[in-house]
Image 1 (cartoon, one colour):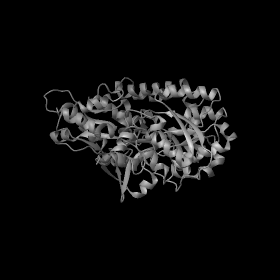
Image 2 (cartoon, rainbow, N blue to C red; image 1 turned 90 degrees about the vertical axis):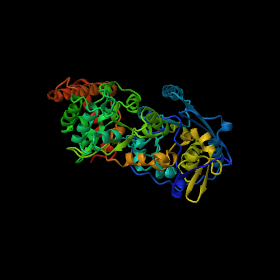
Image 3 (tube, helix red, strand yellow; image 1 turned 30 degrees about the vertical axis):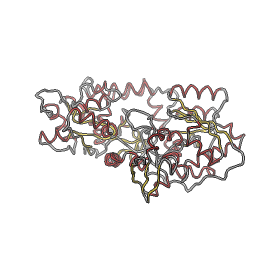
Image 4 (cartoon, rainbow, N blue to C red; image 1 turned 90 degrees about the horizontal axis):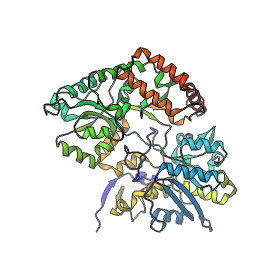
Length: 521
């Protein structure tokens, strides 16, 4: 009899559907197919949808997206079950490379060889909708009620352009990142987990100066992270939104605030400069790429790291940490309090794990269009949602009372199920099932206070080069915190950003779009 792993989840969740994370993520910093980071809205309730009455005619649906691990159709149990439920012949094609996918999609859109359902990013959504190539879903919302109920009103806004819904956005994701700190180092030095910015400075300095690893060498430092994201929580302590090395857009007193223009920004930069001046920060911080900061923490070089929970608590990383030092004890740290409050970071509620569009040409084939709607509704409902998350009941999982029991087959075959999650999954419930051992870390990260950012809703306007501006912002902020440029020149930095980088065009676009979406009155 095959060994079973018991995973607890409420029966209500099962009816709504948990989810298997993918085996290929959107980045190294997330487990499997994590989302891009970000929405703090509560998990929407699943619609009480069931499979629609099947038409006698089987309809082929052509779908393309990025991903990997998709088996051949004869081995694809999810395809087979969906085809049986809604009488389709799904033809799903996935591209492992995002660049390859973008090229293929552009070729097909330009040659009018449209897929019936396809993923788009925000830029493609804007481009194709303006070219009149995408179906406006707004008049069809009554036919997509299960989808709408499943993803929630806020997610609908993510697929909206100029007041019209041109794509279905996946359900919200949740934050993963916090500070982690070496509790064994604190104990050795007789110190406590820092609760304020001043205590953070004191501890970070001690980690750099007082030989916390006891090897008699000055070879440790306080804080590391992925470039400026190492200071997300410091910015948050000054009431400033900063995340993913990007200044956030947020609303205060019905006014749109850009972090760079926040009156507290200079104070925050001044405090961070104290950290760097004290030698308490990773000297190679700005050169860190990928998971280099994680490796420094694992090797015992850093005592505080800003990172996501998977890359510190999944079994393989715990084993690496213990191999270096069996007594190493990394614990999560609450956001420190500062002059502006207590925030672990900002959290962009405009970002989604995926957007799926339908070509406008499909309105000429109402029967096929309805079947695409059936597909989206099915994977959002009480039958299809568990299927695309867990697999087949009785084969990949079983119910024992209020427990979901995953068979060994789920682990062997379930790595691709996420490719069919066109409308997403209930993220928190899924993570608590999939990563039962990490549940305390998941809950800890999710409950941390965050500043609600809105950057994801804003499209790049003509005449504004976001890449160039982003590089300039990172370079100049780095100069301020390392003393290579005095803070007295901060206003001059903003003026250059406006005059040379056309930053005002970006802010004007943000003001207009966020007002249209109802985030500003």
